[in-house]
Structure formats: C-alpha cells, structure tokens
Image 1 (cartoon, rainbow, N blue to C red):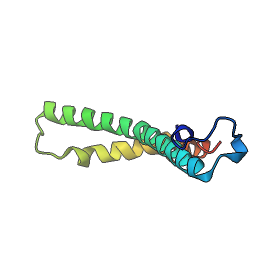
Image 2: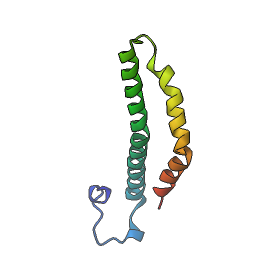
Image 3: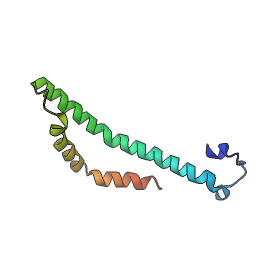
Image 4: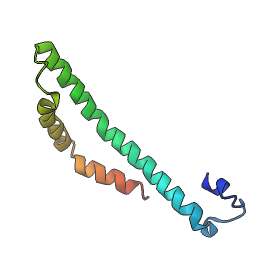
Length: 96
C-alpha cells in the first residue's frame, strides 16, 4: 500500500525500497499485531466480567462492584495459562 502511495515503480527490488515506504509499513504491521494481541488478551477478561456480573445480579448483590470479585479470577486465569510467556511469544513472532 505504501509503495503504491509513494509511487515507487514495481521494478524496484526489496533491497532498494526507500525508508519512507519501509518505516510506515513496519509501524503499521506492528500496530496491527499489537491490536490483535490486545484483543485476544482482552476477550477472556470481558467474559469473566460478564459472568461475574450476571452471577452477582442473579444473587441480588447489585451494589457490589464487579471488578472487586472478578480481579482474582482474572489473575488466576492469567497465571494458569502462563500469560507472560504467551504474550512474549506473540510479540516475538511478529518479528519473524
């Protein structure tokens, strides 16, 4: 996309691509990877919040804040699935 916007001819090899095309392309690909990783990490935590909120509501504890109850479950889930290893593997995989 950036090659087309910069009007670089298609005959230019990968070694000759100018930095004005290379740097924005790299940044955009890393932002895309970061968004995907963030979404994958965020989704289970939202599900835990929804389950805890619906459970508290069904029991009648509407005034009890959901994050107070959900935080230990989120931390437990993160530790059980070895979250730091998964995050670093995902980040390092974007460079390959």
